[in-house]
Length: 472
Ligand SMILES: [Zn+2]
Image (cartoon, rainbow, N blue to C red; front, side, top):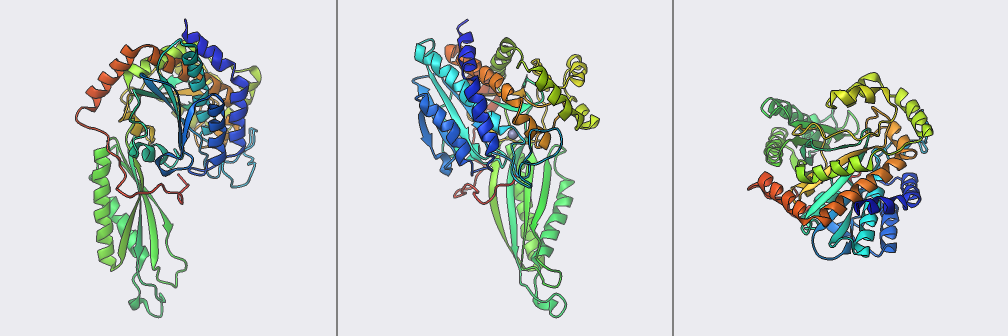
């Protein structure tokens, strides 16, 4: 089968891909600051004669690379941002490379690299004339802060795609059919009047009082929103000293729900409560919309191709050493967390996975229609073009994302998992480009699923990428 040539071409890139993943792991950069990480990917794509466009959506670290011409046009999405405070050496005890420094605790050092590997595999097939069409790689910054794809989508970056595919590092290799929550990220800053809190309280107006009343109001709103909705906040500025009436206070909210329209209803209510809190405290309120994203709409047709490809590629093929190190990492994860990671896994697999340190046998798609607790800006792309996702086994069994254990794995055996993911991405894109009828079917399914609801940016006009806001 000609698709096998893609796997061979990706295999021939193994050393280069793992060293790129290592370089990005060693240079963890937070969202919108990923200059060096993006450059590692851009350099490789340019060597392969992709047309590269850098600086999309107003973000210097967002880019798109294309090879080939005509349709079908298939896009592979990649990410490369790190997380704050997840610096960690490749060892099975918590030991940061840099105390408090950033680290690749979500495996995005593998994520973009695998996408580039897959795109190169497909490029070779187009170059040989095995298939006709266009392969594109999208360098998407700042996923952890739910920014990159949202600002790219607002500028129409994904509009020419016939289908998109992506993946995420994980504990299992399995296609993703569960949905994610749409989200709004909004900050409210109140302006009051400072005064001596004991000597002249009557001349002060407390911005912190307003924040507290807003938060209290939200607790009453919570009673009347749907069970799946989530509203959470942190006070990022609550004043400086008890004897000074705080003239400024800021609270930062995430609003999440299964649909974009529900998120917008809750955000409007939240804004009304903030206005009410300002009235009650005789302060002024300023609302800053940081970002927002859509829920993830999985495309079954694209996912079927992913699953077929995953079975064909088989297992990652981890070594005994990889499995031994994974075993040491697994020992640091509690039994409850391991059980929680197996919650929705088919029972016939769960028992085997529980006993393994690293489980790289592909697990069939499951949890279709379930709504997970997280959010991703892949959601925005999934409402623009038929989108399929999978997870690949790069972490020890039970390892949660955003942990030092994940950072350790991503700097070690996880890199082999990225090569597996590159083959699955490449094989899937190859099949889609080779079979315009599958792409047409995916688009019919997309039209039926989206119906009247077409993509609109969650961003209010004039919203700029939040370069000052790097923490997720
Ligand atoms: Zn991630």
